[in-house]
Image 1 (spheres, rainbow, N blue to C red):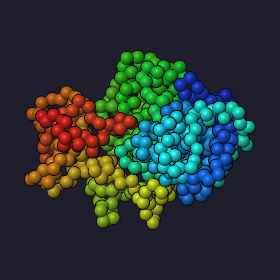
Image 2 (cartoon, one colour):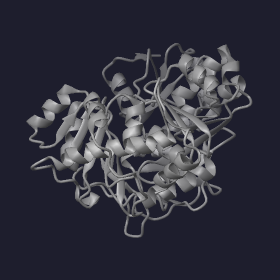
Image 3 (spheres, rainbow, N blue to C red):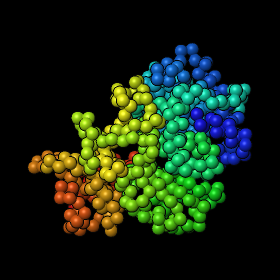
Image 4 (cartoon, rainbow, N blue to C red):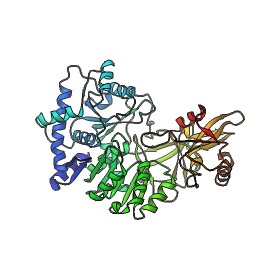
Amino acid sequence: MPITSTILDVASRHPERTAIAGEGERLSYAELVEDSRRVFAVVDALHGAQDHPPAPARETEGIPITAVSVTSAFHTARLVAGLAGHRSVSAVIDPRWPLAHRVRVVVATGIGVVVSDDPALAAALAEAGWRGVVLSLDDVRRREAETRPAAPPAVRDADEPFLMLFSSGTTSDPKAFLKTRRQYRENVAVSSAHLEPLPGVATLAPGPVSYSLTLYAVIECLATGGSVHLADAFDPLDATRRIRDEHITRVVAVPAVVEALTAAARRDPDRLASLDLVVTGGANLPARIRAGLASALPHVRLISYYGAAEIGFIGDSRGGDGTLIDVYDGIAVRVRGADGVDLPDGEPGTLWVRAAACSDGYVSGTTDAVLRDASGWATVHDQARIIGGRLELIGRAGDIAVTGGHKVALPDVERAFDGMAGVGATCAVALPDGRLGTAVALILEGDAPDKAALLAHARSHLAPQFVPRRWYRVARLPRTVGGKIRRAEATELVVRGEAERL
């Protein structure tokens, strides 16, 4: 596993180099190695002291699972990094998930130790009959200070699982899956070739480590000998100060943070003079975000990558309108119809990917969903089309509407309004219609131009079947904690009559 071998190597050659830095706390590579010995000693003792411990999911091959569910990004990262060089499987559970979801994944996967500051979680797990141990972060740190260190971390077998991740958890039951060290080695190889987590590079990755984007940034920086700077939440003033003071050259963040960073740069661009690269996740990054960053920080490069946590990095977009993705070397993609047959260029369907970094499948205790077919092709049911060898992402299955017999990709409707004067965030939705079966509607956030201007713009930028039939306005569109608009919840606002019709 690159993370352990690199940590040991950098700790030997550059012991004082920062490995992980948080808000007022940091560990050098040498300190991270020593910290790892204490972390594992505490966790191993907690698992070993249980008379009737939960049985870990069979996919872990008997390796005990430790979950971290705290708000501190620094301590989450150091615990995961500390356990990576030992016989252990780590999981990061977002403490903001609904309580029922957190209980379900702990019980269903056989997690044996949970680090959490939420007393409600401990009580709910006990009520569910779970036999593991819950400790607060302060309890863990106190035990670390008192426990004799374990043996140093070491490079372990490539096929041993070491990380448990989750596909969702905010609105639906989470599906768990595992990454082996070999699979993550493959993922790091792709990332380091394209997204530049290079040796010695200082990266700022603000936001919860429960985000796959942030967690991957932590692993990749340590796997390549870089320094990762973390923040529990994004604060523009603090972020720009840290970029200046820590000479940070690379930022990895969700699109909403990139937009906020751009606004901060307009006020004080000198604070971001060291910044060279911004990496953000997700497909179809809005043009206003790209243009805004280019205007405020013309010297900064922007890469918008596409990947799936289960599969790994797939490709990225670096120019133009950002809608077409160049697939990375070594990654194979195909688009299939509902019958499983490959579709021709330009035809939308379900995206299937073959990549060495792909997980073997979901943990059986959390879902019966199938990730990979018998020949190794995997899908998370993203919808896409292939155009001239490049990939255009449409969204999930629910992002395609059939109206009057035509397939309409709702993100295509939204993109048509990106950059229109007076229009901010938008969300296209499908609503029941007596004549068409389904009608396309557009919900606008905040103030909006009048309906005539919107309709004229739509007719000049969209095919007739894509032009919205209805128009609505809301003060704020519902979003995930990462800033993504929730299409289903936006639809419900209209259905419940809570959106103003234009």
